[in-house]
Length: 178
Image 1 (cartoon, helix red, strand yellow):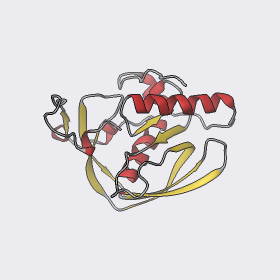
Image 2 (cartoon, helix red, strand yellow):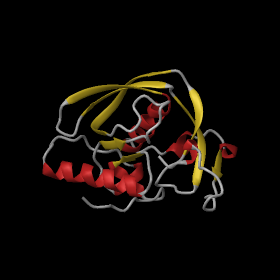
Image 3 (cartoon, helix red, strand yellow):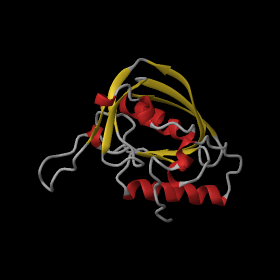
Image 4 (cartoon, one colour):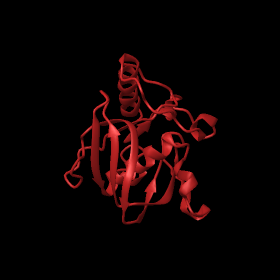
């Protein structure tokens, strides 16, 4: 496994649509393992292949352990994800590893059903609610060339965050880059 460099929001790769995964061989397994290691090293909650410069429909998500989030701690490694149902709406704060130091208020569905394939090609359906649903939508946007800043409705809903000094205060979940 290796940590791959995360590209920044001004890179044109992030605006391109990713190709479907058709081969579930060793190269894909290496990509997924590298993405997991990259996400963990950056303290992220999710990562899409375009964020490491690979135009394939691959996303990974892992929320930190939290008793309030039913699927927290579980690692999702998905290929060709599609949101097939979205219900409800709420506005919440998002950040991104491709745009460090900034957050924005984004409207997202409160629950989604995602159809995808796992890392071996097996078809899966996942029902996600709350924060996990938000992360699925954020990462699925990435494989379609969309950044969260495209969904921020006005400039006053986008701001720079200042990292806290060591020991100053605990960072809220909304301030953790996705």
